Image (tube, helix red, strand yellow):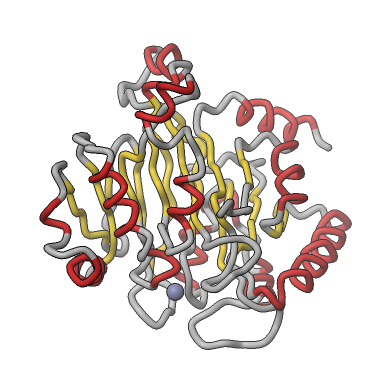
Length: 330
Ligand SMILES: [Zn+2]
């Protein structure tokens, strides 16, 4: 390992941003749960030295949930940290979700919002909630809400602020800076790259679902860690990405560091393959290992990872605050 790479790792290890993988599976996964992430970042948005002190105060962490499929609430409800009321009594680190970012309206990415909000209603939540989602998603959720729990979302006793995400329109919310980009999916899917004010040199990308496009690769590849939907190894299924396609796209990324405005020249990129079809999971995992073996020989700065618990250890060693806990306790 080069010393420059080591330095980058040390810097990231001090990061106040943490990424928790709540699930990494496909729409109907029986193993890994719907793909979803919890981002924890300091609540104080002032730049400079002040945030460093506050970052140690767990009470002030702000939580952003990325995608909330129908399997996600089960994972959230089983975690006592997520609900302030419970965590106070148990003296566990306390936080509750401040904003939700949805990539698209499919059930495995958005239908968990209804039970999550109902839980907040039951808990008598008063804190406002921000929901960022592409055009049309709000209507899907509100309709689903009305049909399942009439009179619907209007019964919430806390404020919900909807923000419509749009391709290439920079969006800033709770200290996070988002850049959205469209992938090729059955419904409008906007993946994104985002960085937090307190750590502008670290960014992550989340693809949501969809076949990759050159424009999407351009945005996602500028991140330090890129969570990409990889549904199959080579079999092409419309509206999804194969590992082979991802490989082809990344082979063209010769100018990766130089063209990335936020990147440092030595910045390595980790691509985490998520959302595999259950039947292809192990195949993709083995293929990822082979790619990395060749990449080491070629000294490429891209590491492919498949989102399984073993791979979590690999990323943790590289200094990312990345916790993969795909097991859903039911
Ligand atoms: Zn989808």
